[in-house]
Length: 295
Image 1 (cartoon, helix red, strand yellow):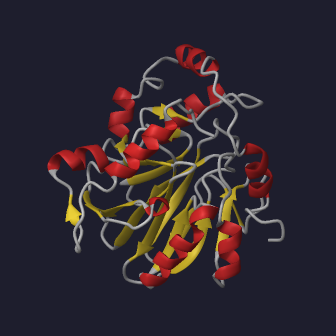
Image 2: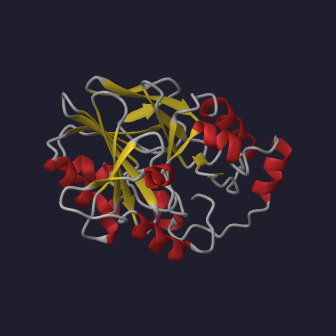
Image 3: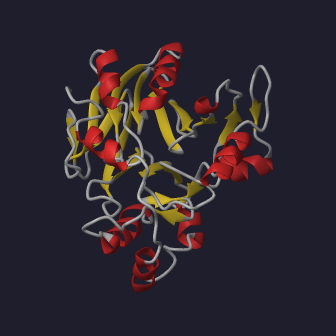
């Protein structure tokens, strides 16, 4: 449901190739150049994976006691994020995709994690969430989404809410505009922000669906995301150019849409002329009910 460019298929291949830059039986740390491109601000490890739907960027989180893994779903070009407390093994997953549910649950099992919350940053239109199906397979798992999304979930999120996992937590910042129910999830020490489709790397989510929240998105990003520390890492729900992470300082300085004033921003967004998302007619109805029709 983000701003989409026409070269998606070639870019998918480029991203898949980029995430497999290095292979070894133990995994390899990024070079300095790789780190700047893929995971600035953190020490990154790229692991070879056996199937294209299982691409991931594994990062050593800078926050003490935090496990972090960035995962990738090829068809919808969606990033899923797995975070856990290394002491208690309690975990949360952000924006999981139905097509990769087996991969995600396998990883959670292999790492001995106890998944507590599966949260969506908004009601997606380009893929079906796996939160409902995960609830069927993991006893005690809770789903979460913004109370303004219009979607079903165990936890209806509001501004300032905390999603706790062990000694760690994510704080909810409401960032509507792409949809009315978008949230950004900020790690307790403000070292990471999971921005969903609100703020992308050098871009932002589309605003052309009724009722057109273009002005709202601009203010959401400037007031709720750009007010975070410069070093805060920005992890979006999608990227179509093979980028995996940015920073608040970078986006404030280089984002070609959000460095403009409000009127210029509105003009850009109103003239993108984007195609309708391929899966919107099946994704939205499913995601309104947590990805299943009997949760």
